[in-house]
Image (cartoon, rainbow, N blue to C red; front, side):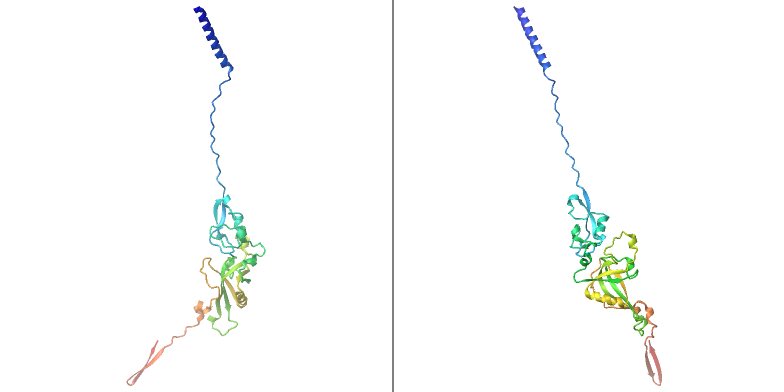
Length: 288
C-alpha cells in the first residue's frame, strides 16, 4: 500500500515537472527591457546680424548727404525696416549726394523714401529751398579751391577788383580792392555733377569750370553784377562753423591794407618851432 502511494506521488511530481518544462518551452523568449531615450533639445541658431546705415548726427530736411553723415549699426536682420540701406560701398554710393526729404535724428535709419537721388526727375528743383534760385559762376583751379569744393559745401564769395583803369589818379595802395559780397552760400552742383562719388580717381583730377550756387533773388542780382566787375573767389566754410549773416560785409580791403609797400614814402613827421627871447638874444627851438 505504501509502495503504491509512493509510486503515485512520484508519478504526479514527474508529471508536474514535465508540465512546467513544457510550458517554458512553449512560451516565447523574454521581452528585452525598454530603455527610454532622452533627446537633447534642438540647437536654435542665433538670428542673422546685418550692418545698417544710420544717421551719424541730426540731419535737417534739404541736406545734400555725404559719407560722413552716416555710420554703420549692427542689428538683427528682422529689425531692419523696409527700404533701409545696409552697410557697404554700394549703399553709400546710393545715398551720396541725395537730397534728404525729412528731418532724421541721430542713430535713426535712412529709408529709400526719405531721399531724392540726383537721377530722379525734378531733383535740382527739389534741392532749391523755397524762395531761392540757382546761379552758376565760372571758376578755375585757384578760384575754385583746387577742385576741392563739393555739392553741399557752404562758401563765401570774395570779389577782387583792379581800379587802375577807371581811376588812374588813385594812389597805388587804392587801386586793388577786395570785399566779401556773399557769405554762407550753399553749393548745389559742380559742373553738371550734383553729387560726388569720391571713388573715381579720373573724375577727381578734373578741375571744375562752373559752380552752381543757391541764392535768393537779390543775391543773384549782386552776383551777376560782380561777375562783370572783377574776379570772384570761393572760400569754403567749416562744416562746424558758427552761423553768420548771409549778407555782404561792409568793410573793404585795399592793397595798402595788405602791403605797406603801397603806402608810398613816409612823410616827415610834423614839428613845432618855438622862438625863445632872453633879454637881447633870440633862439629858435624845434620840438619833434
